Each structure stands twice: as structure tokens, then as C-alpha cells.
Length: 365
Image (cartoon, rainbow, N blue to C red; front, side, top):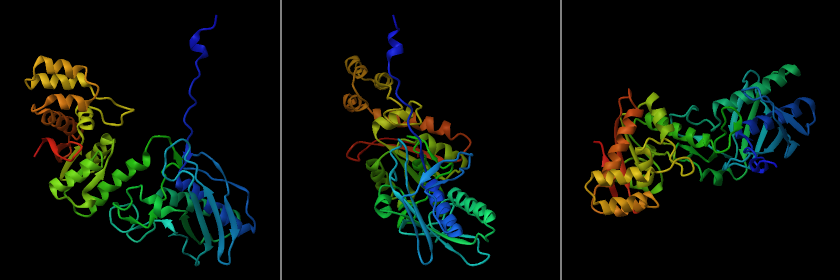
């Protein structure tokens, strides 16, 4: 008889996708090759930084009086990427002799307006890695066809302005649309690499603005509350979400004078218990540990027993009543953070807010 386990259906692995940078590179290569040969290929293959060679179908391909245009529909795989299925359009024109490759922001691609990003103020928000990929593709084609390789590449993203409203671009000083991102060219499902990169860039932008106090918040309520509490500027606010570990790791290498971590009770409880990824699917609150805190604070055995079987962190907090459970959790979280930042001279405090934005726990200066 077959083992039942052999009949179980395994879930297929999540499908990887391609970054906006990879799509822009494919479109740029297709357009420039068409300028050099007089025709468009139906499909175009590029080489990514790690050696992968994906092939893309063209969604648009046409000549204009000034040059050539190609477009790719981005496939982010199984990642919930805001730019999944976005149309990445690239116009390539022959540039002035000796100028090399010049990048321009078309409609839907943002422009950098604040210092601290890897692109200078006034430059299109096209990150260094995609620029290198496109420049390399142009150089290879120029060498093959004995061309000088002086081109202007204008990148556009359909509906990019509206899609950018769902990103942190405006806070980073990237206005007018989305960024062209991608270090490897590959989108790994649920890695949230773009979000983490935005958090890192937020630290850099705040530092470049001379801000000495920044705050990483787990959500909008805690972000608004901590901003009001300390009178922080918008560029001092980092929407770290669930990625506390990513923020702390970056700050250890790029320290600031002062850091406040702000969040709701459940998220900060996870942090206090050593979790660096606060997502509900990747870490859980240790309810028994919260019950132990209540016991240490002097709660009755009846309350502690109810806390042990409570269905959520919020339910334990409700049982706490006047006992300063929020304060205790904040203090525990502060210890975890300071240990993670060991060696970095950063003054840290932790704030916990309820759903209405009321401060219910604080530790640190």
C-alpha cells in the first residue's frame, strides 16, 4: 500500500519575476538594435549581473522621426509588486558625439529632488544597477555594429504617477513617478527587496538632510503618533513596516544620532521577543511570555491564567488593565534593539501606541 505522504500534492515553488531595471534594459536593447539594423526583433535576450539570460517579448515596437521605441510588460512573478504588469517603455535616440549614454525620465518615471540617494538631485530616478545594465547592452551592440554608442535613453512607465502613490517615493524626494530599480534584475517573491531598499534610502535621505533624529514605524497610526510626539519632519519618518531587522542592520553600518522605534503592541511584543521580521506569517507573539510579564508586574493568578490562553496580544493587553504591560514590553524591546545595534553610537527609544494613537508604552530617553 502506498504511503499517504506520497500522495500529498506539493505546492509549486513561487515564480520569480523581472525587475523594472531588467525590463527597461530589454526595451532599450531592442530599440537601439532596431536603430542599428533597421528592424525590430520579436523577442530580446539580455544578460543580468549574475549571468542569467532572460528573454522578453516586445509589447510595443516602432520607429519615430527621432529614434525607436520598444516596450515590455513587466512580469513580477508571484511577488505582489506594485509594478506587476506595468508597461515599461523606452525611447532611444542617437545622441551627441562623445556623450556616451544619457538617461532621461519620461512620463511616469520620477526625478530626484533630495540629496542622499545614489542619483544626484535633478537626475531621473534610474538606479545605478539598471543604468549599468543598459549601458553594457548599448556598448555590446555598438561594438557589434561599429557604432559610437552615443545615445539618449528615455524611460517611461504607463500610469507611473498613480502607481508611485503606493510607494515611499515622495518621502524620499522622488517626484513625478516611479523608480527604475533592481540590483540583480530578478524579483524574488515576497522578499520585499524594494521596500527594504526604500527604508535604507530613507535613512540616507534623512542623513543628507542633516536630520539627527529619525523614527522607524510599523504602520500609519504609529507613524502619525510618533511624529506628533516628537515634532519630526516628514523625511525623518521611515515606514519600516515589518522589517525592523533590515532597518537595524543598516543603521549599525550607517548610524544616526537618535532612533525611535514606534509601533503597536503586538508588533513591538514580537520585537521584544527577538523577532526581526514582524510579519504575521513569519513570526508569532509568545503569549505565554506576555502572561509571565503580567505575573512579574503583580497581576493575580486568575488574570495570568486568562492571559496564558488569550487568543492575541491585544487580548492580553486588555487583561492587563492598569498594570504597565506596555512599559515592560517597550523596555524588553529596547534591550533587543540595543543589542542588535551594539557598537553603533545611537541613542534609542521605543514607543508603543494603541489603535487610537495613544502612547501606552515607552522606554529610553
